[in-house]
Image 1 (cartoon, rainbow, N blue to C red):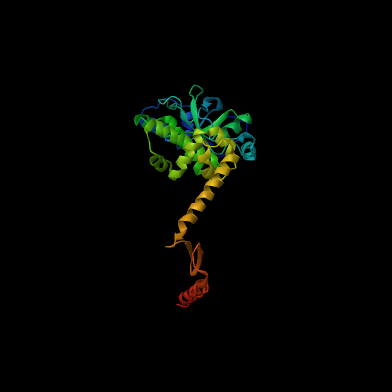
Image 2 (image 1 turned 90 degrees about the vertical axis):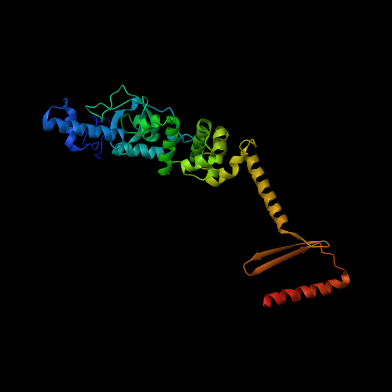
Length: 330
């Protein structure tokens, strides 16, 4: 795609990647005439229109035509992040090289047949992904943006699928594929989608996990974070690891502070270790316990509370050593 200078004239069809054979038909378009030429012109235009609706050809629209109704799945003040500043500098130097993704607010909208790749100012669109790119263009004073129309919106309506859920899933999918989300943002997005699917489709966590292509435990953690979003953001922030979120999310509705949650987690782990150690001990008939730990060829034996008369303790020790030696030699 050709590089574009900021505040320049609208991109030509050639710059947007529209096949050259059809570009001339858009500037001075007339209704298809009879004969072979008219037939070819109409066919070419219909082909571009179909590609626009299938999301295979980008279009140009005003940034003012786009509404960000979903909000960002990024948390924190990402506009001040170094990554956003670098993106803005890159767009300033090279222009927009990757389209954003949108869908029409009106599900019956179709492009202008005369010029499908240029969208007039009357149509309004919902932003699905590319929030940072759109914001960068706006801050740079560029009033036009390249966009891809999300496909299959008509089939989604025919299938009675909730488009808001579809929008959330598309936003999550694109960012996840590009690894453009922090662990917390990913978990929160999963939780937001899971809550909607549970409420509107009575979907199980197993079904939600399969639908999103994630492990089922992540769905449970995501729901907990989404239900306690403000506290979760305060606890985890943009730099929390996935392990930290998985470990501490169950305490979001049980503890007030992160410090209390960490203490509760430590107590739980210590109790778990104690329970495991207790399960490993075995009782000796007549009193006492012992624990046998195996590690490859090595064996550790611990015995406690065994009642042996003093006069027999030396014999016990000697026979125990003989037993160990016999099994070691064998």
